[in-house]
Image (cartoon, rainbow, N blue to C red; front, side, top):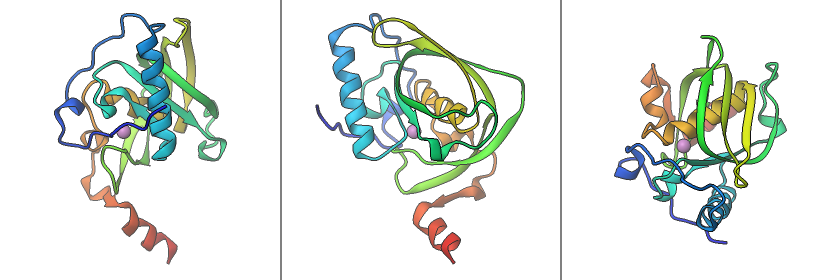
Length: 176
Ligand code: NI
């Protein structure tokens, strides 16, 4: 196991399009996923994409804890998932706003519109297909992580930059 260094906004690895994984069962992919999970849990974070640890491959890891779900139908908690070569397909055009953070944009949080309903597919570490239809926070996490594979950070998805803030300032205001 290893905790990897996380690239921060401005590093070119975060703005390039990542390459597909040729063989999800390869030992180096298993090692990469193990290290990504260690890094995500240590941070702590709810998701991590390989480019964030300076590896330009189409690999993401994430989990959705029950307390983070929104109550929207289909917004289900999910155990730790490693998703390789993901393909996203929004269902319908409905979007919702929600605050996101990113380990590559430390200290900040911003309100981002995302598709409410999403089907995503990809491969697991055994090369088996993952095919899920989800909503709400679960759908948000997957959209955020998979954007990293196309060189997109959440501030680039924001439509109202007045809703970009420092986490500690936000917390101070909401605790009053
Ligand atoms: Ni991120």
